[in-house]
Length: 343
Image 1 (cartoon, one colour):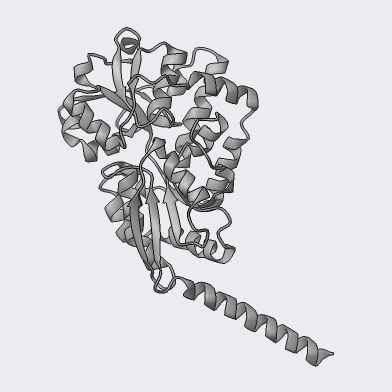
Image 2 (cartoon, rainbow, N blue to C red):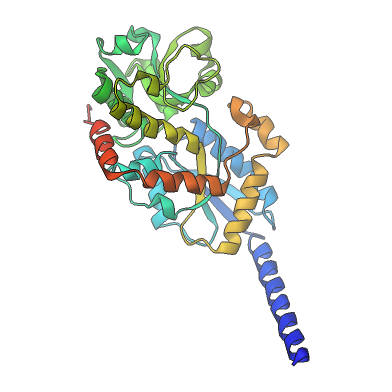
């Protein structure tokens, strides 16, 4: 009996070893596709490509990781592809809208995924996003925006570019005009330069300093409100969204919206990715975001790279907490963030 037990145990250990070997060898010679939910030039694109350049070094077999832009519908197109179409074998990853769980809760049209079912890898900490306008708009504060109509660029009717602006219109009485149809924050910047629109939401101050440095240097871009849980160190006088609440309901709404910034820039694999490969990908992502070479490149765009990254377990918990938003509050948010197309 003892001999049989030892033999069975030995066979089990050999089988486990073989499984581990197969897991470690799976990616050798493979090409991993990393879907990026914006067009080229946006901060999401920068970090998506940055991860694609480094993560392969931390995956056994060192596969080639190829970034692919898939802009559209405020990131929903990429999320829907990852959820419904992409192979579930660990060869396709994605990075998309950090508010995907939030927009699921408020039933934003176009979402065909369940955020809690994604195989989350982790996230890169994100700076606090703002709603900001070009100096030519003649607006310097939220109070000014209640008196002067300002055209604001957005990608689709869903997503933070439009949703944040609609929320301000609905609950604070601003007069922003939402103009949709752009494929990324970078193309909205170009539209601002051309005078088609005068501002946008959901861009961080470090991103402006890196990608539109002349606007910052020459005082051409004016942040009006910060959509996060903490202020950017460079903008101590620009109010947080929650500071503008005039009653308890608004405070609760603003707190839920602002909490999406805690998600950072998330990275995920499709649902039902094999557990052994998912573990490899999670470990590789965790190693990538603390790697010295990765952080040296990241520092060109973000001041937040000294912060600890958001782990897969933390990200999963944040998503689960969001999808558990009480239905009554979700309904009020849905009403406040509904967008009427202006073009």
